[in-house]
Length: 516
Image (cartoon, rainbow, N blue to C red; front, side):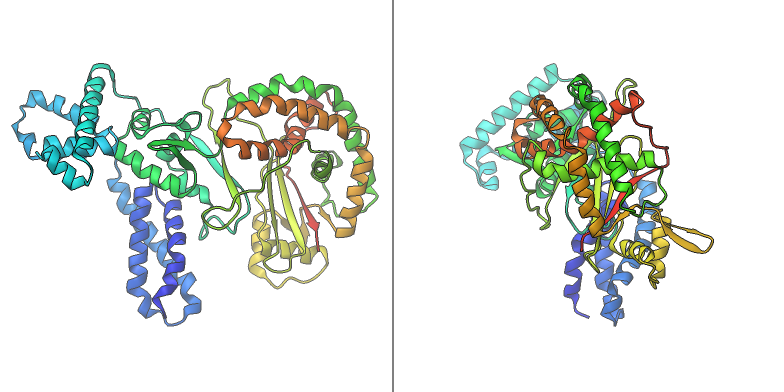
């Protein structure tokens, strides 16, 4: 076998390591150990078709061993970056506390100041020697040394240690990409460690320097610098000004909820008419004899409503959506995050979750769309082989893929009863879906423009909740609000007024649509 086969798996192995460790430092170490062992053991593998299962089996065994080893040794971040300096012994025990404090203050400086302080005071180099060592003008060294002294003096006079108050977020992506969460990790796993989350939070509203971030996160600057290099590589952070950093995606906070609650009166007058259109569409759809998976009619109304708005969005959505950018991995997607709110009176930011997949990797005939809103339980999207299994059942064909059938049953997409398999997801054939779209236009003829106008009024204030530099992300978000406001406002008001029945806690809202 050729060793260059390993090159294609370096990023995947690192992603695997991130998913199986507690920090990026541990992930670095584990991924290196896996790759070293793969190189060492590769000559024993003669069949290249068995390389991938062999690799992940080896990675799994090494991850287990690594976690056992690190569980005994894992510690918090260390502030001691200057623990081997020769001058340390000359200090008395009373001075040691002051010395430790100084080391911590130096560690909080960014590299341009920290390095010069260490070289000048601890390594004993002159400004001329530092100039030659760092290849910068001596005048620059003198200026940075002066600035570093000022910063340290200010720290001693005014700064108390910043308490570590970690911010917690859930970071996800929206868009397209060939990820499966294991051997092909989703991009957000590379930026979801605790320090990354805090840096992203503090750089969101305003740009921050390394030193500011070190104080806010209460960790040494060299940790921040290392983390920032990764965040820039992963296109989560940019450097719009030299030495200043900002987050490049939307972070949802409780102020979204507060704005939406205050803006409900925009939609309240049209809710009754809107629900009437939803019910009329449900009546029309009943005549299509679709496969409804024996779902209660009151739950199907929600599904038909969101499907109708997806179709009508092309004509009535008041905003355009910029195309998603191509990312570092060649796919089109963007990050977004939700803050974890801890106060009792704070509710999580409410939104519409939507995931879509298809079986383009094989037949390319069906897509599966899963919605999460209004009390429905979350159900992840199907993989293409699971869609194939559902398609075979719907068309009374025999599926020979036993493993995929088992996966579909485990995922809840298929149930087995009396030795018969049944799909749990409503399904539209292509012709049924075309008729459905026509029915949607008829049913919402008298209400869709009223809804579009209300969305426009809502978005006038909504855009102001986000940083100005995220203009494209905000535009895409505003475009998506055409669906989200149905899920989080229209349906909620309708349930409060008794116009719609709340779905049962274990019910899900998803659909399969034939598109070929």
